[in-house]
Length: 246
Image (cartoon, rainbow, N blue to C red):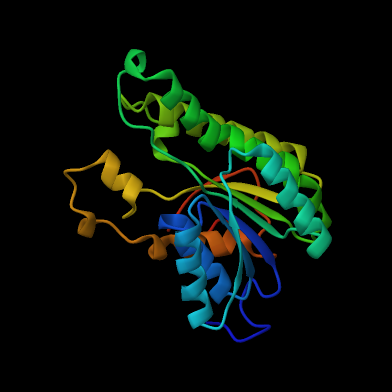
């Protein structure tokens, strides 16, 4: 744990969705260790409290926001609260996502398809809409979105998830192009195969111990969230050597 005022993200305000487990939780813990104040967003209040307990045990604290990212008005209210309390947002990590199951395209239930697109894609657009002014108010705003290799490689039965992530990549790249002449940097992180509950759902026959834990990929998030990062509009594979400017 970095002492007060220390760490690569010292004094920065970081909003992380899907922060109660998996990659989101690992990033929240790492950002706090780097000195950031974490605004942790997740649907499950109990899991958020467990995260808060873990952070407090290290001397850090977080703002807990138990909300479904598909609740657009609630996301707008969160933006308003951040504006009143901090006047800015330094880091946005759009991580919340669901798999929605694997199925032939014609067999997906409409409600499942719609939920996957709503959480994985539309909710991130709503975050941009609500947080854009706050990110621009930061002297070095950073927006990171979590993708998957299936967005760029065709895998039968992954249609809903793959389509949502492909859409997310274009959403983020468009946002990067629109903010190219500002201090805001927008990037996309491809975590690769990581030991998470979603991975276990998708690959039930795989040995989880053969995969790296989420904590192993947090360096990439810190690099891209830091004020020193000058990369924007890129898809960065977690764990890969940092590109120039990161």
